[in-house]
Length: 421
Image (cartoon, rainbow, N blue to C red; front, side):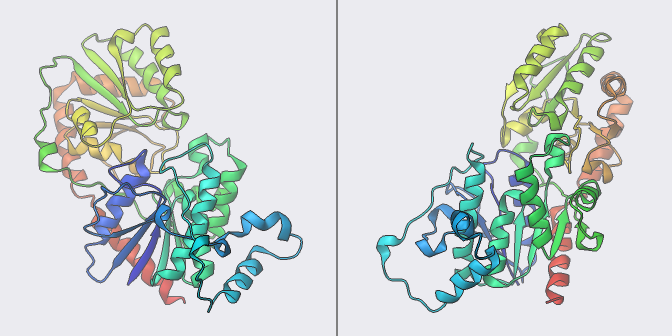
């Protein structure tokens, strides 16, 4: 079996959890010897690990004028034909046409990130997806997150192959309910056109069913997992001579992640114990606001902002931490607590996170309950027996959460969808 996957980012160049999850899932699926995966992304950088997959860059795929999507000409044609009719006519006309005018060939440029003109890049990506869909041989299409849904739909229209979409998050998670109508429209259209929908948690599955009006039989949860850290990561020094207890928040500093609850809880802990430092690792649109909030609570001397961190830096900071905190308001899954637990760091997570569904040895609190969050932090830095118990049991638990198992579940979905064709 061969799967044509559409993604947006891939390690080592990642800006969020999407690339990490795509990498882990594909590597886990690659253990199935009869499964081949071609991964399409807007802009590869050339240093990606392709030992277990083949990567195609949309930025390296030549197109001609006939590959322009309906969206580009829709204003002129919308009164006369639907998008489906447009694509059908175009593909019929050019089905046996051998294009020879190389002067009209060209590649579309992509930023390789999340630019201000993101919707335009998503549309351009869908254009190139149509070209790739005609040139590759495959059995099923798999599109990761809303950025790639239009590409997956175009590939499905071109090839007639079934489409599976993977919902890593929804705009309800990112916006605390203040949904962007353009993003919602893309998400809803992707779900409506998909033959099956994979969600990363039951929390996300409920959102897809209730907010996007999808048939429950069409939606399956496949929880994320975590990559085992390399030996050099495990060998990193734990403390580096620091005697204070260290509590860490690591992620995008945005309203989805609940950073203000972390700062408020830190102030409560520091009112009870002075031998603790708090780290907020990451970047985001609320970073300056959090710096001001820490100053207002008079804890700036005990609160540290590191900026964005990736790769080995993430594990360096985790290995030096005593407690990891993820107070997300709405977290579809949340891989970072699993990474912390791999390093022997007890984790405190919000009950409103997908990973709470599979973790028994993490402390769970409501994101808004600052007192409970502060008590949990204080307990873990004050009572060695509690800390040691969660360190040992958490490590044992997370070592059993493997991408190979998630990959097997995805393969079962592929087999089911293909049997319906």
